[in-house]
Length: 409
Ligand SMILES: Cc1cc2nc3c(=O)[nH]c(=O)nc-3n(C[C@H](O)[C@H](O)[C@H](O)COP(=O)(O)O)c2cc1C
Image (cartoon, rainbow, N blue to C red; front, side, top):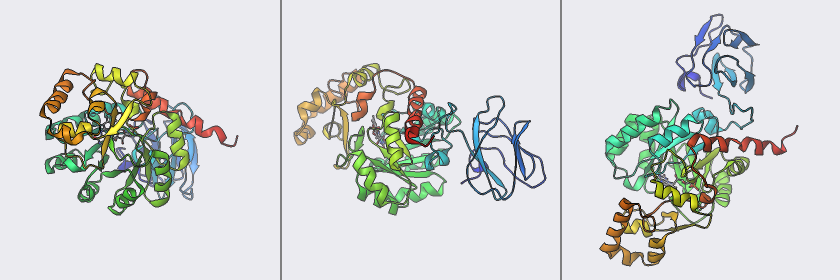
């Protein structure tokens, strides 16, 4: 467990016999007054205690009352206090996991990076809602874009993350990311290994998305903090070799590092399933495609809302048409459309067809989604109305109810 001062609190001390006021910036407790050790904790009114020095390191559920103050849990550890913010203000019992602990989350969920769709606004909104939001960096953007989006995401006052594509990562982009220092960086799809240590050395938690168990083991060997087991039903790019559930089961047994599950997790039901299996959280992209905070134009949003679970297809058509140097094993899952159907299986021909390629770019600019792409996973069938990110995260938070279904009364 880490101490408060490493996680956004202005200060924290527990120094026997002294009265110390600690102002927390976690947004969940306005003020925590720690008196002596034994400790009394409250907001002006001593609500609990005393807790002796010999309190073992474990969760101590309590309720701290006061303006804007909600349920919390804390533990005493060798003279320091560690705070565990509430899992749910709704009185739920969302499990605390590595993910919630590491980033002070209320919901064990990452809003996945989605280049071209999630920028700082969506990332910040997801983080503000109690999950961890990320924005995806397209290789083509200027460095200033990364800095700008990081500023927007950071304005939530909560941890956020940045998703990088290893095959297209420039030194300038890496330096910008190191400068803005998000809490989490994922770097996937290509030779990510050289980036792991520089990022970790900057105090950034590093994730890699793995599409096979072997890839997960390699990521662990490369020194990442967390592996994302990403199944082929997921939206955007990745492998299409294994579906999320079989992949998650083997990855959980194969690696020691924390594992998040991605691909098809779009509601509380999906999140509950992967948490019950042993994942430390979900990593969801498609679920947020219907959000008001994405950069999708209205025409693209309409396609998302209208699409059903069978409305996506996996392949390289759109990458080939754009001349993008994605490693061939990482195709993309997108909404199936006329352009895809026309060129599927004829990618070599497409690569030489200047007119078709120019047509795709024109369609993208003209928002013609019979030709232009919208990356989305099979869970797109669950996205049926426009919502804001906070509403989507709140929906995921209902996983706690599902998980408590079999709990002893
Ligand atoms: C529109 C879209 C864009 C994506 N862009 C990125 C990206 O830039 N970097 C990345 O690591 N993953 C990207 N992904 C993959 C997601 O991080 C994640 O693996 C995926 O969304 C999980 O599956 P789900 O869509 O079923 O939730 C993208 C996914 C989508 C849907």
